[in-house]
Image 1: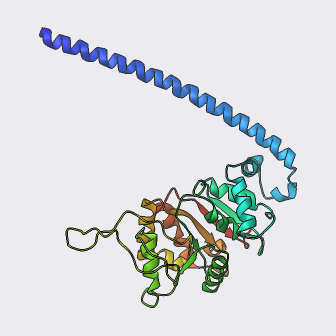
Image 2: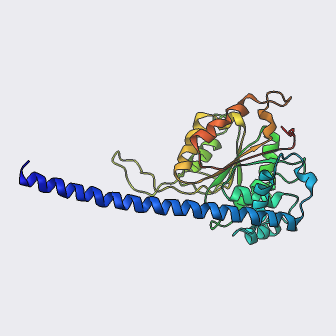
Image 3: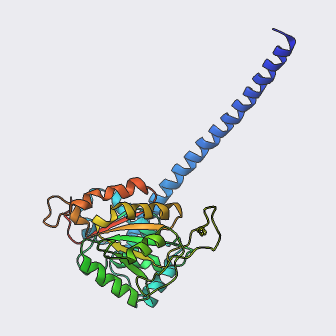
Length: 304
């Protein structure tokens, strides 16, 4: 071996040795952080148990739970969150209500934390508020964008959109065929982040551009523009359509897709008399948009 090669071998060996020392140091830090995380989780569990005793939750509310783990998870959403004042303010000023109903606050905290949530409430129990209120919060707590609501009944969709717009919450519906409903294209454009101006149908009108010319001579699209609506209602059959999924993919890339709501979630059960086959296909949403929280709600569900 030449002297030059020997020097190069020594240099590389020293470099490997130095890197090994750094890696060992990082491993030690990781081990310490893992232990610290474990200690913090244990401390949190103890505090959650204390909180559970303080709020004195009726045991019958948890009769369907097999152990304390689920109870601790629920009490986790009873603590203070940064948006507490904001949701209280929206409840009174936007929805003209004085107080939350049972479990509404926990559900709001769950979905606003970015977690998936399955809500079982009786009819008239306030399920809709749990996904309508978040869209009214400032961008400090909810990213700018819109929420998608899947509902099986067109009459229910139309009624909710009407009521929400009366409250000043901008809601639109994707219904019918695109040929019969030309305003659907405006909604697709807005979902995709193409700039639109406010109009009378669905809060949308013709698409705008930034005025720059493309190489082909046409007007080039400007930067993504947040849609002017806050909620998009549609049927499950509409959601799994190619045009809607393409628009949602673009919205997801632009970080405008806030959450998916599956209303009347019991329609996914093949054993139910209200079974809708396309409800079974909604799993495509989780596959294509893995980080978007899902909230499913129903008044008709068994304990299993």
